[in-house]
Image 1: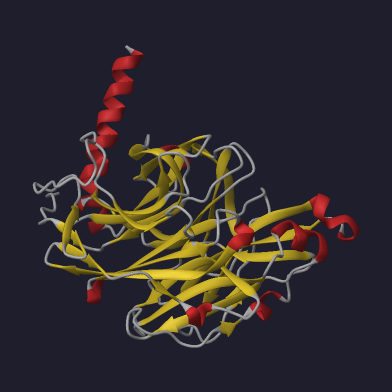
Image 2: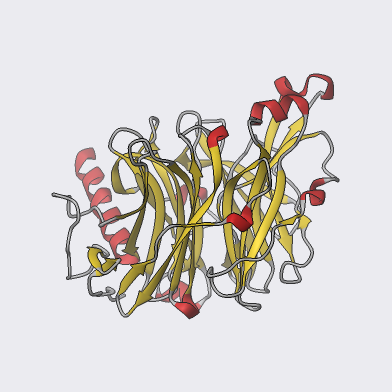
Length: 414
């Protein structure tokens, strides 16, 4: 595979960023290790200013457009969230020109805060969906787990790649059939469109074991919303019930001509939860605690995507998986993991650390050309709430740095 040489990337016409494999390296940081890709802050917490958390990223290849979303908050606390903001990045012959921060007033309800942005693009109808929760001001997650659900599942759409947006649509009733539900949330990050055109949106729900005292005995279970008619009607899948699992993302994988849904979920255990479903909406038949992917203390959202792997696997239409997640318990050092055999949990690589420092939620996208990927992630020097960074890298970057780490471990064992 060849590298993807690119001219300097620009934000507001200023050079700032490009993949580590590029020969045009213009750093905006003082000094960085060669294995760390350059990064661009898209949302930053200024003194006495709003905080930004919970990234969601989408890339629309036909328009060469990135759309980055985040929650705007009064401070870092979940209950202080206000509304979702966005930035569009136009990719032109090797550089990205980012527009300014725009508030999404369409994605709001009166006396509610907007949380958990999750974006997906329907390639057939050319419609961009942004899903989110609307939660009454001042109401916490624990309050809903005690007193019942008041979290609404909503979305808005854009037919011009994020320039304008529709009115809000509330689809909370889709969860009415879930028995013993205490509360329900969308998983932030991105949804997917399957090869046969279905739209998939990750979510999770708290289920009570004993309804009379459910807060002490409820458990989070991952599932997803799906639509087979370009988003006109939404249904819910079966849930992961074997282990407690929360925020998740999904990817479609193909192995020997068989398409499956892979789910990677946040866990209350020391390991991530991985699951496979053989059909859309159906049971997660294969559920296990990951053999290689560890969960950090108190858990953290991670992002996963699938893509056609090397030349041999691409010819067979087989997929690889990529995963991003902090690797240290105090939410430090964002790692990129690779799995070239998705049906084997023990095939995950050692991580390539792309950011050294505090890091949190992240969202990966496949740029669908020249083995290039992007990630939007929380990071900072003192906390992971200081910035939301944008970063480009290539598959070659990942393979090269994973190989270096593998060689280092081999020498250490000797």
